[in-house]
Each structure stands twice: as structure tokens, then as C-alpha cells.
Image (cartoon, rainbow over all chains, first blue to last red; front, side):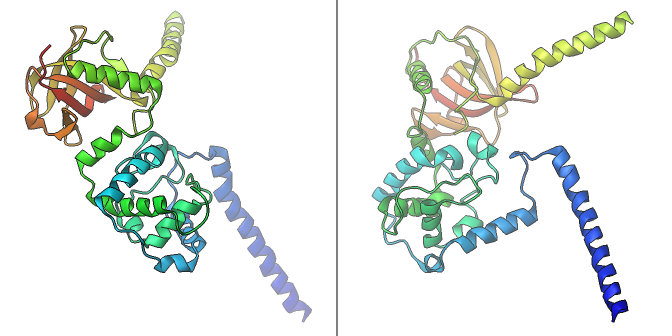
Length: 211
Length: 105
């Protein structure tokens, strides 16, 4: 009996030592290198995070459908809302290809693609309302299932795969701008309309251009 | 010995001045305002408002806008006023958006 117990303890000890060596082999280089939001999540991490996000959404939202129809008026309001609140990270076209989006960990997904489009209306609604923990996605507005503005955004997310270049251009005018950007835009419009520009060329701009 | 010291000094100057300049150019957009003086499907040459000639590369990702409406490369012509938002890539200016009008001053 004591021999069996001794063997079990030996196996256990060897397993613990191997576990510690394996852990050290993985973590020491990582700690030495540090962590950066510039990295791309590994497949395992991305898969785990997606599963956790899906688990975080109550099951009743998986079958919930959008109560409002995607009429031109609804989409127009949603585009203005998106351009003002969401585009800074997600881009007007939903690609996530923005200055902030590129620096987030994990990156915002390309919402035109299957991973987002296959989510139910309710799952999209819940994600906007409650955010995603351990990501850059905040929770918006008050809790509840009857926020029309959020349902309009869900309609817009469904519209993203067929968004036209003209729609994108109109949204660009609704993106938040600094006073300097507004001034610069006015100067450019003035130049295109036949006015003159006193700016030395080319002009270098270091921020806010990637929206 | 002197040669080595000069080399180290040159490298230090390059690190202190050259890299920030490169990073600045890569951080954001470079805006060019001017009139189109030459145009091919690969590039556009612009005489800027301060009379410099600047060549900007065009590619499939470049978007065009004329009078606030979506347009195409084929709508652009020599003599048009342009506002180009571009990025410096591999030493060349790469156009992101080309806004233009055929307004004459």
C-alpha cells in the first residue's frame, strides 16, 4: 500500500515539476518581452474570447429579432449615430480600420464579415448595450430591451455589407472633428470652390485622419 | 579611431533626427492642395498652391470624390483642382482620397 502511495506521490511530483518547467518555458519569454496591444491575439485566445463573449449573452437574446424595419429613415438616423459614436473605432464602413481600432486589443472585428453578420439581432443589441468585458467595447445607454436607437444601429450593422461609397462619404461629414479639422476642411472646400490657399505644401497631419 | 567616432556620431544624429521624421510621416495623412498637371492610371502630378510639383501614386484603394459625390479616376482630368489626402509609403506619396473639382479660379 505504501509502495503504491509512494509511486503516486512520485508521479504527482514529476507532473508538478513538468508543469512548472512548461509554464516557465512559456511565461519567462513572454514576461521578458512584455505585453503589447499591438500584438494579434493567438487563435486559442481569440477562440476563448469569442466563446466567453457568446456565453456572456443571455440565451433569450439569441432568438430575439429586430422590432424595427430597416427603412431609409431608420438607416439614415443610424448612419448619423454610428458616424458620431461608433466610427472612431469601427470606421464608417465597419472594417475597424481606424487609428483607434488599429491600437485596440483585440482589434474590432470587420463587421461586414460572417463572424458578426451571423450573430442574431438580439446578440448584436446586447453587445451594444452591455459592451464586451476585457475589450475596448463599452456599454452604451441605459439597460433595457427597448432602446430604439440601438435597434437602429443593429439595422445599420446588417446594412454594412452593402454600404456604398456615396453613403460612406456622407458619413465622413458626420464624424466628430476638432476645431482644427473643421477649419482645415473649410479651407479645402474653399480651395476646391476656386479660392486660394496660403498653406505651405504638402501639409503634414498627425492625428484624426484615419477615421 | 576618428573615423569610428564620426560614424557613431552620424548614427546618433540619424537616430535623433531621422526616425522621428519618418514616424511623423507615417502617423497621419499628408494633404496636398493644387492643380493636376499630369495624370496616368498609376499617378497624378500636382502643382501645389506654393508652386511645387508633387507626384502622388494612385492605386485600386484610392477613392475619388467630385463636388461632394463619389467619383472615379476617369472623371479626373488635367487642370482640375485637387485636395489629396495621402500617406508616405516606401518613399512615395500614396493617395488615400482624391477630392477634386473643375472650378477655375
